[in-house]
Image (cartoon, rainbow, N blue to C red; front, side):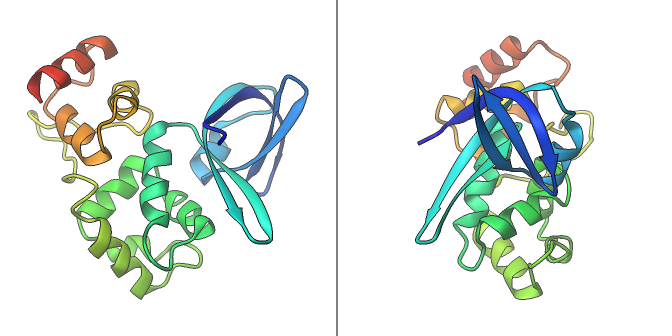
Length: 188
C-alpha cells in the first residue's frame, strides 16, 4: 500500500499529476482544487489511495488527510466509484463537500460529473451521520479548513472524520496547531 508520495510535480494534464519521487514518476488523479493549487516543479506531499481493479491500477492523491478520508467514505457508498468520488471532491474543498453532505444538500452533490440525483441522495443518506455536523461561522463554532494540520493529526491518531471535526469546531483555528490538538484531546 502506498500511503503517500512526496516529490516534485513534473507534469500536469487533465486532472492528473506526475510526481517524481527520487527518479520514479507516480501518476496521481487529484481533485480539481488540488490540481489548480499545484505548479510545475513544486515539491508536494499527497496522501494516496491505491485503487486495484481487474483491469486497472490507479493512484488517487489528496493534499490533506481529511480529503483522503472523505474520498474513502464516498467510495464506500454503493454506486460511487473512485472517478465519481474525485468528481464530488472537485466541487469544492473537502470541508465544503463535507458540509454539503452534513446539510443534506443532494443538489450540490448531484452537480458532480457522473453523479445523478439518486446517487447524490444515497451519499447523503449513507454518510450524513458519519461526516459530523455542518460548520458555521458563529463566534463559538469555527469553520474548519480541509488543509487543517490539527484535523489531519487527529485523524492520524485514529479519530474518525466526524469525531475529529467535532473535537475541533469549538477551538479557535488561530491557535497554534499543537495547542489545538492538545485542547481537542483534552476535551474528548
